[in-house]
Image 1 (cartoon, rainbow, N blue to C red):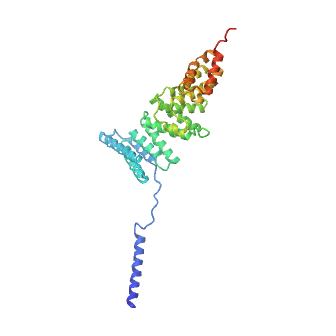
Image 2 (image 1 turned 90 degrees about the vertical axis):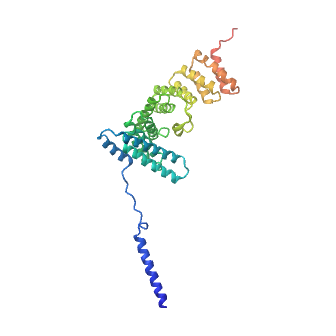
Length: 332
């Protein structure tokens, strides 16, 4: 009996000692919530200010910075090509560390700011804080190197989102900032269809008709992109094709009273895409205001469109309307 009591006492002491050890063990302590530290952009701005006071960056240090930039880009690529959420976040963290190190080694390496801005806006959580942080980083990139295309593109896209384009009442401040950045992209790439397309939309919303028509003409003359990209995200039912530019340009020319140009643009659009009822209707609208000479120019395009789409009532009506205006009555 005494033996059993002794065993119970020993067991109780052991349990008590284990509990005390567990409470004092680092792994058992309550996790300490990290204090909210400074943002990456704040650290970078501080380092950039200090770097301006120093002499020229040594070549070896610049090479190390470029190596870190490549390392960061490799982690970004790995993050984008893995299905595991944990692996994506881990690669994003490693990419951020590498890019920050690149900037620390060479604060004038604008590509590192651009990559870090793009990483910031594309890494969860996707909130307004991340957008603002990405904007600051991209602004540093274009300040360090004014011809940084990627930095201007990020700013143009994020300012467009904050402008509320296609989502309600325009924010006047971010509208002007977005216009300025899309203009910078045009400066660096004169045939950038997306930049001209967004400029045309902003000019339309701000009632700048002449600027809108000019932007639409530039869009029509631009190199057609392979993807709709950011434009497709903002305007989900539209695309960056030359056909879309023609429709918008024709409508803008009609509103501006430039009927002859509208008929010319829309006639070609109808010949290229006879099944597009919107183009045909716009052409009919333009023809109602056109004189006989202008209307006659649309006959050949409409006849060509009618050959490929002979049962289209809109095309038949348009062609009949033009002939009624242009053909001389038969002598009695």
